[in-house]
Image 1: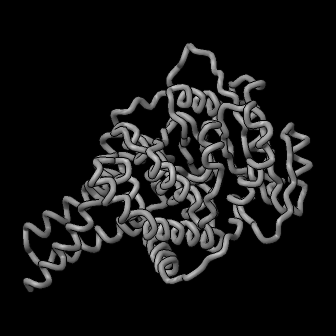
Image 2 (image 1 turned 180 degrees about the vertical axis):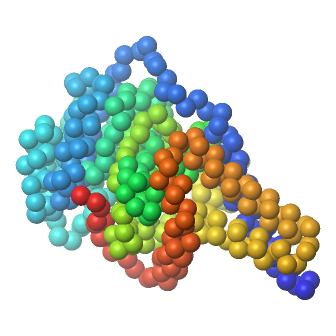
Image 3 (image 1 turned 90 degrees about the horizontal axis):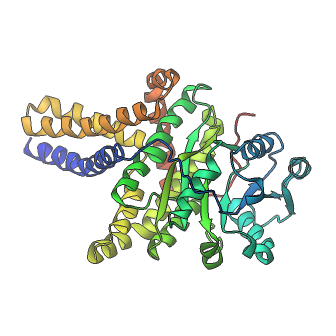
Length: 393
């Protein structure tokens, strides 16, 4: 039995590390002012808004209309759409709604990262006209204060800014509701804590703004399955911090069925695993030796498994400790689960999650089993190609 106690204790100790990390970020984030700052200084950042779009004739108009509805001077931004290997009317619709549209046909180099690199190249002769480049996915919408909020953070001296990336359809299905929870925790609670602690919040693939200097220095040369994480790691390696603009919100629909969501989630998890293998150990060592906590944090972030698996592991370990009747084991199990629960509950409260999200917890066991299968497949697969995610239309 002693061996069993040691194994359970070691497993709980390992899980206690991410639990403590998440609890720290959760409470630190509570001290960040969440109300948008009202600056008396007139905005002056001129944005080049880059929108990669592959067959987005249905959803692109919603994004362009939300940009148009922003409370921001129209002379301070221009929208550029790259209609990437499109077979529908994306290009025509983009032009009709006022965007400058470039059409790209490239059968080999497919996907958003290649489209972004190509579009940046098309704008090279005009780069001096813009102060910052803003990347938005074509299937998203932005809050009316989005551009003003990004402008404020850039004027505060940050060269890279990430908005809050949220789920717009939590009530559509139990699956989209649980994805809403994951996005609240990963795209709001944790970045808020990092902002409070002076860390770098990370990049989420859309809602990202970069100064012209960063674009001229880096362009877009990240082409892995997790191109946003790869680019973030490059910035972190060079000491460039990403500011979290919590008041700027970008919404996107999530898939409502397992079939629609499988490819997206498999790509995300395989991409994160690849980034962890490539960067985490090196960043941990370099960060600890140099005292660069942003590197340490970037490494830890990639090592934490998906939250559904983390919560399932915590609950399972607690159940396994109860028959041992060992107070220290049970106490450790309770402490770990309490930290994880605080991270979840406080996150949902601060996000003012709708009732549909709480109802979706009944579906959580099925989702966890599916997510575990996805995670195992992501570990086992040797290669995975980019495939466009199917979303509700």
